[in-house]
Structures are given as structure tokens and as C-alpha cells.
Amino acid sequence: MSKLVIIGLDCATPQLVFDAWLDRLPNIRSLVQRGIAGPLKSTLPPITVPAWTAMMTSKDPGMLGFYGFRNRKSYDYEDLFFANAKYVKDKTVWNYLSRNRLKSLVFGVPQTYPPKPLNGVLVASFLTPSKDVQFTYPDEIKKDLDEAADGDYIIDVKDFRTDNKDKLVAAIYEMTRRRFKAFRKFYTSDSYDFAMMVEMGVDRIHHGFWRYFDKSHRLYEPGNPYENVIEDYYKYLDEEIGKTLEILEPDTSVMLVSDHGAKTMTGAICINEWLQQKGWLTLKEKPTKPSRMELDMIDWSKTKAWGEGGYYSRLFLNVQGREPQGQIPQAEYEQFRDEVKAALEGIVDEQGNNIGTKAFRPEEVYRQATGIPPDLIVYLGNLDWRSAGSVGVGSIYMYENDTGPDDANHAEYGIFVFAPGAGRTVAPKDDYSIYDIAPTILKYFDVTVPEDMIGTSIL
Image (tube, rainbow, N blue to C red):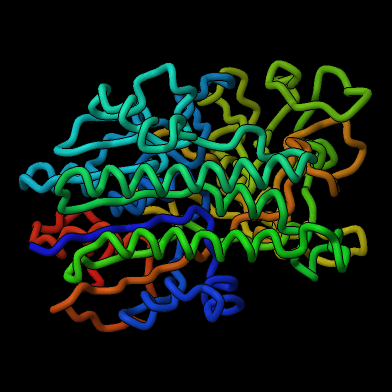
């Protein structure tokens, strides 16, 4: 049976890979020319967690039961959990392959820490807190991993939201070089049916350097010293992909994917400042300077709603009989949620122009809405603006990120390329979904696709 290798590039975006720079990326271009390619529609919301797990399970965030990195465990105000692999209850593709005695190599796929057993080898993702914990399966390969990566396998760059741009770009290159080198070393040291790696450097370089190359960014300055950083990094990635292709047998099929794309960020809407303006959120005391909003700052007896910051916003309502100090009668819940949704979608910029916000009711966009979903999932300015959770800002508009320098927001489409190995063919489709990847992998290996997977095989 021919092998399948997937190279994941977190945040790789189609307007750069396919439109702007494909002629400068010879190895990626060769994959496109060998097979099929196009934008890959991401999850709602398009965020690393849960997008990669959705890709590997063909389940939407509502079915998975987590809607971002941090989620509510109960309706208590501060009962939150960080969505690592312990909370992934659905089977991934390598679980199904293991059951069918197929061996997998899984490197850096987000939401795989802490690692779980499989038939093969797994190196957990950037959510690993440090290398002092067990982050590989089996545990004893950690020494081999460091050796394969020139002495120090790098899980993630530290503090990628920084003003020290020279240090950041050097760290991204070093992380990427070591991950690809280690992946190739492990791949050639054994025989794997399925191998997948995810490189986080694309995401880090987009967030750190988008303003320096995108002429539409409000902070772009022509001729700045970092103007070519992102393009040069894509070229370097293409070289690493080329080295990886060289070690594969001719009948090995290759897939290139990303979990979401990227776009310029106009600024941030301070969601909790906006809620205070609307009279729906009351703090015990007004902050005298911009501050991260902590839930113990809220006067729950006078609050109907609060929000979380991030590349999108999760908005929660304070409902009687549901939250400990709920203020919205359950009979008025839907009417009030409709009112909040309409108000969100009416937000204007400082010139009075509607920014195009979209607010989603979870039960309308997911097959199920398990766990404790937000009451509304909000794309501020349709993801042209991020959500800032800070209070004490004095305005609903913020143009410097409240969690450190960050120039780009996530976009709804990533990339998809499938280059079949010798002896295989594949036909193009009109569109590609992140949920189609898992059933495609299983069908490639003649493994029965479970009926509860919501995607459709591309093969």
C-alpha cells in the first residue's frame, strides 16, 4: 500500500501561496501541478484550536465540545478549562489507522498534548508546557528527538508577540529548520504508512510581520527593513518541503494543508467596553488605566453579558437559573440574544461606517452544540478587527494589540494541495472543506469512513 505524507502549515494563506508567490515556490508549485489545489474552508471560528482537531476527526467545534483555546467547564463564572488533548474524546485518523494495523508518525499537530498511545510515534504540539513533561509517545524517544534536531527540538518560539523582530525571525527559522530535520530523520528511521507534521512558524511570522509587507495595513511603511521577511520565509519553507519530498518513494502521495488563513488586522474592538456602553456590563469599580478584565471585577447583580478577547469574540449572557447570579429571565433569553446580535452587527468605526460584524448562534452553525458553548460567536468586522477583552481603555476602539504586537487576524480559508503518488489519480472539486481531510485519509487507506464524520472524501 502506498504511503501518505501530510505537511501542515499553520495559518498558510491562499492569497500568498496560490496567488502572489506560487511562481517563487517551486516545490509547492510542483505539488499543485501534480494534483489538485485550492482554498480550504476552515472551521467556525477559524482558530488553531479546534481547527486541526476538526480536520483530523471530521467533527465541527460544537460536536467536539470546545470553541477555542479556553472554554467554560460549567456555568460558574470562572470555571474554565484549556482545551488540550485530554478533552478530545473523538477518534482521530491515526486512531482509526492504528486499529487497522497501519503505522503513523505524528509531529506537532495542535491539540495532541498530552500524548495518547497510537501505533507509531507522536510528538505533541506547541501547547506542550515545557520539555520537562511527557510530550512524546513513546516517552523514551525524547532523547532521539533532540538528537535528530541538532541537540534541541524546539516546540514553539517564545513570546512571538514582541518588538524584538530580529530575535523573533531568527527563532522562527531555527524552530522550523529543526522540526523539518527531525521529522525527516524519524520518517527515514522506520517505515510509516501515514506521516504528518505541522509547522507553526507561518502563524508566528504572519502575526509578527504582516504590517511590514501588506501595503493595505495602516502601519505599512515602504522600504522598511522587514518588507520581505514573510516572502523570504515562505521561500525557505518551500526549500524544506523540497528536502522532504526528496526522501519519499515515488508512489507516496503528498498533501499540503493549513487550518486557516490570514488577513490584515484593522484594530481591535474592546468588547467589554462596548458592553458597558450598552448598559449590559457593570464593573464594581472603573479601572483608571487599561487593564485585563478579570471576572471578579464584574458586578454580576447588574450585568447581563460579558465577552472574551481573541481573534474572534465569545460573548456570554448572564441567565437566571443558569449562571449563579443570572439577570436575564429565561423566558426573555432569545429576545435579548437577538437584541445583542443586532447591536453587534450594527457596530460602526470611528467614521460612522458599519464594520460588517457577524454574530453566530452556535446551535445554528454546528451539527450539535455540546459542552458549554458561547451564547454568540462574533467575527468583529468579519475578522478585520479582533476582540480585545480589556477594560479601562476609554474607547471601544484599540489600534495596538492588548496582548502584544500583532498585525494579522485569522481568515476563513486555508490551503489544500493533494499530489497523488505514481499510479494514483484524483479529480478536482469546486470547493474543499477542512472536514473533508479525515475521510479522504481513511479512504486512501481503504479504511471504512465512520458515518458520524461530516466531511466527504475528496478521492
